[in-house]
Image 1: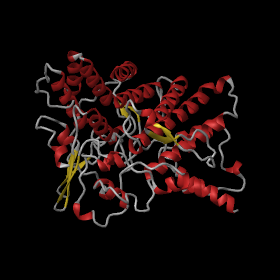
Image 2: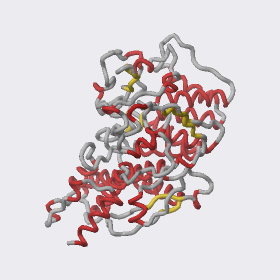
Image 3: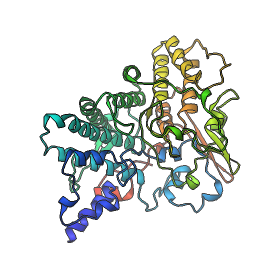
Image 4: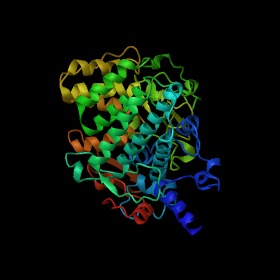
Length: 457
């Protein structure tokens, strides 16, 4: 009995499993999947205990998009979210666990259970497509979970990746295995290998927006390569995504601006016309009542001709509240969508030196986001085009989770560095580029029980 309790504790602390997983019946066959449909149901769990389609939240809390009422900060719980917002250096978790770490490894655990379980099946010809779909989904979501964890708990990828700390790469469902941190190069290699396996198995287009597809793999690869500074490969995968996408940018001029609406795109549900793969971020507790309030700096980016200023934000209790999510359910959309692909192409073309192509992509988006009377943006230098592209990423991809990734990669590059400033009472907190606090510490329980090397803080 003591052995079983220890294993369950390890599962909870190292992998972040939910309560329902811990409630193990004596007859495991009553609870374990035993068919392809059962495994697909695990991968399709959007809202339940598993939350396959959720993403990390600490990056949004730490970044420069959100503003938090200073009055709630002194005694706010969970402490580590307050400490994230205020960039506290020491005693970061204050004994608390990390939802981002636990939920990430919980998703990985279930992906590993699916991949291990499918080895016991020899699909019939008529079941082959279903088998490939669920197996490809497990590879995809495992890669996505590791990528998201790396954006929080690992340094930015560089030429020194083989000597940088990566993640513990759990590749099977056996939770008793003690897995140490791989290096960052091996971590990204593993992500790329999973996506290769996923792409070989997934259909071109998904049966539903919550399921991955080949197109979602290419969109994901475009995002990763942009993060790594490999603009040729980012461009290639963005072009593949664009060529296969069945739809077009939504013209915001056609939207009805209902000042009472707190979910502008709710009528689309999961089927927003720009969405490639639906994922979302449960609102962090520090967002009071689940409401994300925009920083003053963010609001200043939208001029009078920009439709997004009024479509993305509503005034609530005298504060500018973000309502422009593509999730159709109030939570911030964090998945892959056409607008991000267009902006990746604009940036890659600018960096490669194809200025006309960069401007064409940039203006294709702007025409659908501004009043009809504005003129196309024009500049004849890479630097000017790049600055406008990066501004459009901030205006369009707001509260998507990608701003945190952008800050980290831009600061590593140093050409377009970002300095974050926040006010806490009478104190101004300033975080310069490449501060060690751009990498979060590992949760204390993971370090102690797993014997993992801690990040410098």
